[in-house]
Amino acid sequence: MNKIFKLLFLLILPHVIYAGVTAKVDYKTVELGEMVTYSLNISGEDITRPNVRRLCDTDVISTSSQTSVQIINGNITKSYTLSYKFVPQKSCTIESIAIEIGGKTELSNPVDITVKPVSAAKDKNFILTLSTDKKELSIGETFDLTLIFKQKTDSEAVDSEFTPPELKGFWVKNESKPQSYKEGKYSVTKVVYTMAAQRAGKLKIAKAQMRIASRTGRANSWGSWIPTIKWKTYFSNELNLDVKPLPSGVSLVGDFSIEAKVDKKEINVNEAVNLTIEVLGIGNLEDIKNFKPYIDGVSVFDEKIVIEGTKLTQKIAFIAERNFTIPAFNLKYFDPETKEIKTISSKEIDVKVKNAKAKEELTIKREDKKSVEAGTGSNTKFDKTVLIITFIVGLVSGILLMLLKPFKRLKKEKKSSLKEPKVLLMKLLPYKDDEEVGKIMDILEKNIYSNEKLEYDKKALKEILKKYEID
Image (cartoon, rainbow, N blue to C red; front, side):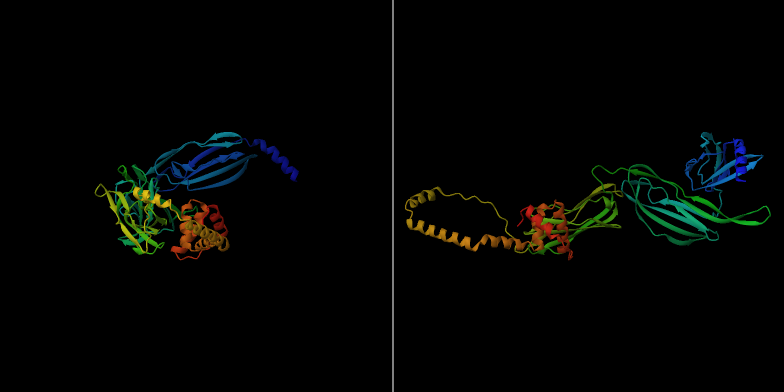
C-alpha cells in the first residue's frame, strides 16, 4: 500500500509548477495609531523567508506564519502566509519584497497605505503629551522633560505597553517616580525626566508611544457576538530644542556653591586632617574634576567624587610633619540665567602641627682669615700627648663597635618602626606608582582613616622593602 501512495505522489508531483507571491494589508486606510497587518501569501517549494523588520519606516511589532497544502484536480498547491503587524505613522507605499522560491526570485506587489490624523474628539479616551520647561539652552544645562498620560475614567484598558521617546544627544540624569492624580474626567500619570544636552545644534525629542489594548467584538457568520482585543497606539507630540555651545574655556554650566570643611585645624605630627568638599547646585556636576591639590611636604590621599542628586562630595586626607595651608578650591562655570561666566572659591584653611619639625636651612660658614692665620701658629705646637690619647680612644671605640654591634641594633630598631602603619605608609609613599605598593597603601589607608582591620600580604611587603631598600 505504501508503494502505491509513493507512486501516486511521484505521478502528481510534476503538476506542482505554480510559484508566486502576493502582498496585501487588512486595512488600506487607517487612523494614526491603529495597527495594520501586512501579509505575504507565498506559493511554491523551497522558500527562503524574507527578513522583514521595518515597514513604512516603522518597526515591526510582531510576526506570525501559517502553512497550508491543497490538492485540486491532482495538482498539489503548498502555500505560506507570513504576517507582520506594525503601526504606520504616515501614509506610505510598501515596496515590492524579493522572495526566493525554488531557486528563483519572485517579487511581491507594492501596497499603498493611507494614514489619517486622529479624529478631533472633545473627550478622547487616552492622551499622551510631552513638554519641557526650556526650548533654548546650553550644552550640559539641565532641564525637565515632563511626560503626562491621561486616561478617561470610564474607559477600559485590558493591557498597555509604554515606549519612551528616543533621546539621542541627551543625558538622562534622573527619572522621577510616577505621580498619579485626578483631573476632571481623567486619571493622570506624570513622570519628570531631568536631562541635559550632549551637543550643540537643533536637537529633537521623538514621540513617546503608549499601546492600549481595549475590548471590542465582531459578529460571526451565525450572528453571535465574539469578544476580541484590539490594540491601538497613542503618540505624544515631538519637541525641538535649540542647544547653544558654551563659551570658550568653560566646561560647567548651571548655578553652584562650594564649601570646604576640615574635622580639625590642629594635629600631631603624622596625624591626618580630613577635608570634605561639597558642591551644591543644578548643572552638570558629573563634569567636575578631582579637587586633589599638591602641597609641598604634605602627603595627600583622595577618595572618589560622589554625586547624589544636586550634591557633589569629595573627601581628602592630609598628613604632614610641619604646619601647612590647604589652598582654596575654585569652580568656573557659565550661568545660563545671567549669561555670565562666574568663578566661586572655598576659603583657605591653615593647619597647625604640634611639635612640628623646624624647617632645615642650608647654611655655609666662612672661616675668618685672621682666625685661620692665628691657628697655624698653634698647630706647630701640637702636643704629642693629644695624639697618643686620640689613638687610644680610637682603638677602644673600634673594639666596642665590634663587640656591641650597635649598627645592627639600630637597623633592628628602624625595622621595628615599620610596624607602625602611619610610618610604613609614609615610607611607601614615594613608590605609590608600583601596583603592589598601591595595593598595600590602599589597605593601610583604610585601616588608618576608616578604622578597618584589613590584612595585607606580608610576604609581598617584604619583597617591596627589599626591592626599594626601605628600612
